[in-house]
Amino acid sequence: MKVLDPLVEPSNEPSELQPAPSLTRHSARELALQVLFQWDFHGTTDGWLDEFWAQQRSLKPVRVFANQLVVGVQAQQEEIDQLIEQVAENWSLDRMAIVDRNILRQTIYELIWIPDIPAKVSVDEALQLAKSFADDEAKRFVNGILDKILRHDPRLEEKRTHIR
Image (cartoon, rainbow, N blue to C red):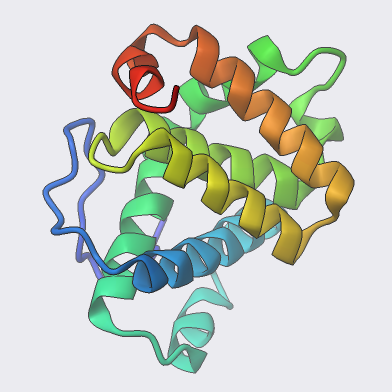
């Protein structure tokens, strides 16, 4: 799947990007969510991705971080979806709103595979995305799922110690 210019390859390794200012990363998260939403909805990037990026006036660090999130989610989607389904009681991925599902995917990728971003920042950003793109019920839903994953996934032990 073509995401952006191949600025970042998917990786299971920690991020090598320099931290971008929080506003830059927030903008990148919003753009990544929009791309993931469309990709999830259409099942392809044909016919819309190039136009989407042509309409964006984002700086290179924004596009690089957005690309890292999108490509990372795509590379780890199977494992991310399994995590969501393990903790989402009485919810299948298909029943979840597309925006909620992709906020979760994006944030879980960030929590597990981008170690330099504190868990509190990732979760706060997810809640801001839910507030901007969904509703209060989605915020509670997203927060509940992320809280369960954060409390139980052994890979997040280090990040857990920094949020208490």
